[in-house]
Image 1 (tube, helix red, strand yellow):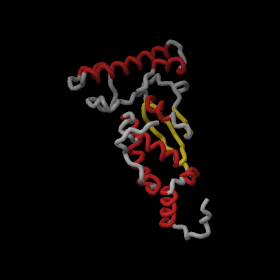
Image 2: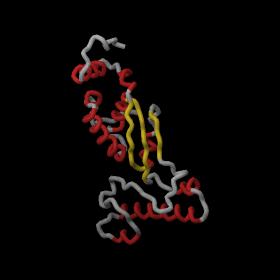
Image 3: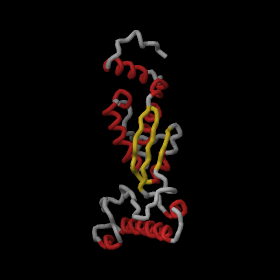
Image 4: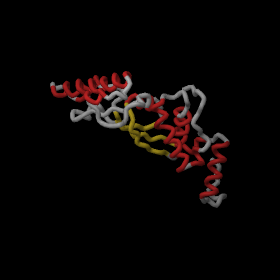
Length: 197
């Protein structure tokens, strides 16, 4: 657009200055030519929100084809603060430091796992048995987006109005992007305001 390739002595400093100038002018189409891919491990509820961003390519762990007969992994939500990562069974629920709501949550996850494994052992395929799996099921998703779209996603998904588990992913991701290519992401901050989608 600017036909500067033969007018500027390109190096890290001039490139940084040029990109900053382009972004300051709001001419973000030029950053659509570069993309970034990330792999995120989270629960399926979070991915239901992530995949609403349409200008992104996704590859997600499939509950149709992945068979969890040897055990189901769930993501513990941040509001279950009294439970740590690990493997749990019904005997662990006798622990007196767990709140009643956390105990109910863990029981429900264990029930979902038990029913899922029972359905598989009764001849159901993974794609049939998956209907009993909750949003808290752990999943992996790889997403690729151009830099302009990443800027858009991070502006929306670091807002205080965003789901807490989404913020747990997007705020560290923003910080990592700022460390790696700050010129493109340094003007994005963890937002205190509510952003309309």
